[in-house]
Structure formats: C-alpha cells, structure tokens
Image (cartoon, rainbow, N blue to C red; front, side):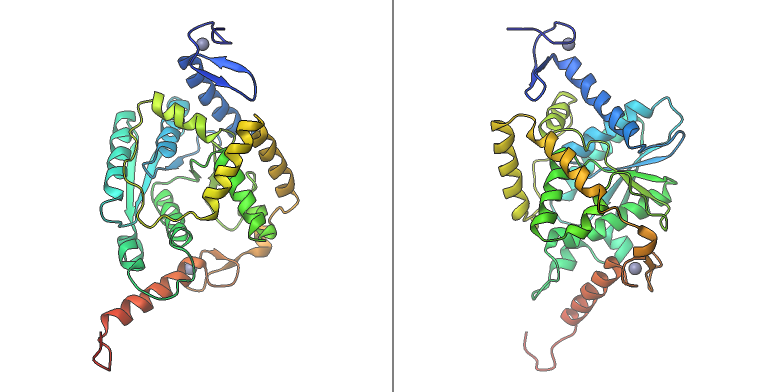
Length: 318
Ligand SMILES: [Zn+2]
Ligand SMILES: [Zn+2]
C-alpha cells in the first residue's frame, strides 16, 4: 500500500476525489491549510480583526474554534468563543461544558448568552404551547440563536462571526432553497455578501470542507462528542437531501465539490443588495425586510402564547 502522498508516512485517509493519500498529521495540516485558503479567497477575516467563533459545542464548531485559534494565535486577531444557551433541559449542559473546556485549553475567552436573559423565555418555555407554530422548532430556534450570537459577538467587540457550516451544510441549504422555491433567497448564501446596514459580518471558514473530513479532524483532535441530540430536532427534508448527496458522492467522488462550485455560480446571479432590502425594525432597530424583524415578530407570538397559558380560562376549564 502506498504511503502518504506528502511525506510517505503511514496512510490514514484517502481523499477519494483527488486521489491523495494522507497520513494522520498531513491530514490535519491539510484541514488547517484548506481553511486558511478559504478565508483568504473570500477575504473572510481582515488583519487585526476580532473574530467571534459561534460554538454550539458540537464537533464542527469545536473543530473550527481549534483551527482558528491555531491560525490566529500569533497574528494580533482577537478570538473569542460565543455560545448560546437556548434553555433545553438535559441537552445544552453537556455541549456547553465541552465548549468551556476547549476554550480554556486553548486560552480563548468564552462568552455564553441565554435565550432567557436575552428574550425573556427559554426554548423549553417557548415551545411549551400547543397550536399552530408559524415555523418548525429548528427554524424558529435558528432565528433566535442567530440574534443571540450577534449580540454576544458585539458585546465581545468582534466585527466578524465565524460559524462552522461545512461544504455539506452549504450545498444542502442551497438545494433546500431550490426545493422550497426560495430562489430569491439564494443571494444570502453569497460568501462575499456583506450587509452595509449591519456592522457584523458572518463567515463560514469550513464551507469548502467535506463534513466527513471535519468529523475526522475532530476525532483526531480529541474533540469531545456530544452524546445527546436536541429533543426538538426534526430535520425532515434536510436529512433526505444529506443522504441523497452522500450516496451520489460515494458513486461519483468529487460531486459535492462540483455542486459547491455550481451553487456559488448560481448564487452570484442573485446577489443581494442589502441596502435596498433593509429597513430598520420598528421595535429593535436591526435590519429587516418588512419593518419588523423576524426575531421581534416571533417573540411577540411566543409572549402572547405564554401569557394566554398563564391566564386561567374564563370558562374555568383547563
Ligand atoms: Zn504525511
Ligand atoms: Zn426587531
């Protein structure tokens, strides 16, 4: 069996789409190097810029924290880990403790914000009502999480938020937008997109890395795996798209890379003019498309339900 394509050492991983055979340490180096190239290609992080890494405590985000801390340790960029405690009993504690211990191992500051503190209710409380929800729990939670991360990043003095979305996530999201008929929303996926009305940029330094390779990197790096999954998770269509893409990739190595390039090409035709699409939210002042941002809209719905549940029914039922 042939040795590592780089150093001749003991083979550890075969990158099927390129034919490279890598030993464990050359594999790790290749992940860091690919991330560095992605950051530079899309000008994701500027010199001396402070970066907030969104750390859920899952393997992808812990790996991103490790890679970025390593890349920027000596460059004068501040790196801070930010985590959100959604308030899901029995689920979030473990992930937060993984995040906490990696941050302290790396000597990186770790900031945790909670839904309760920021919005007045935990996710458990928000989802604890019957009836129609305007969004599924994941997209509902995603809207709040995104806002909480932005707030935390701004408190930490960062100007850019790095999230751990990998190539698989990117291509899945692209395909799901197509399947939902949301073609005009594709522009928001543009990695070079910046919202002129909002001081914080979002970047995805792992967007050119296969999920499988990030998982392997995490394993090698000794990143702790979360044993509990979110009780509210129901991915529906996304998991079908993931399975489909994995089958296609197994039969046609490199197909996901091609899909990423095609996605980026299509996305560039839907580039978002953020100034045209952005009006300040009447309640919180953040950019919105309709004058009321999705956070404030959903928050009002939750508050209404939480309130109506607290009030005894006039008919004495219950
Ligand atoms: Zn090697
Ligand atoms: Zn708002």
